[in-house]
Length: 164
Image (cartoon, rainbow, N blue to C red; front, side, top):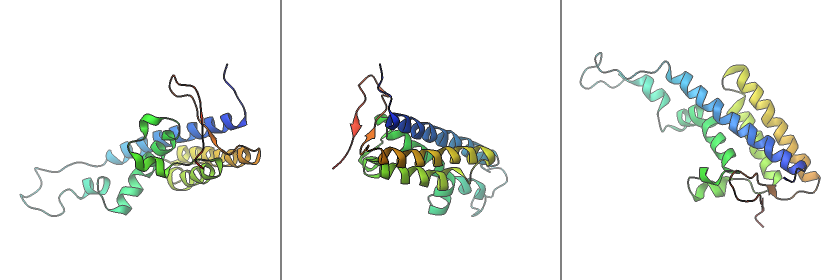
């Protein structure tokens, strides 16, 4: 039987908020791409602004990249706290929280920068869940939990992660 204490419930809340953030980001990108098309017939052979709509969704310019893809990136990062296969490289490990204080700041950043400004009411609801998750992280730390209780997302047993 699983051990279900407040830290595990907190980890479940954070996991759910991150999964919904990823879904929110995917929905946002799909809605944004609904108005984007690649022009070919109406463009001359060399025309500078022919596919400006495409560039508005797929660009490496930081303001476009972060505005469009922030919920997706924050959702993947949040899920990768518990799902090791989502950690694409060692850089993820450096970015991820290792205790509930860090996790609370991560969830607050997710709410402000990856939820509230996207997809209307759905974004506000997911943002509210992220803020509740942030508060739960603070409460988990105040109850004495120093390390994040990892959820059992594979057949391996659940573990605590704490980097000293």
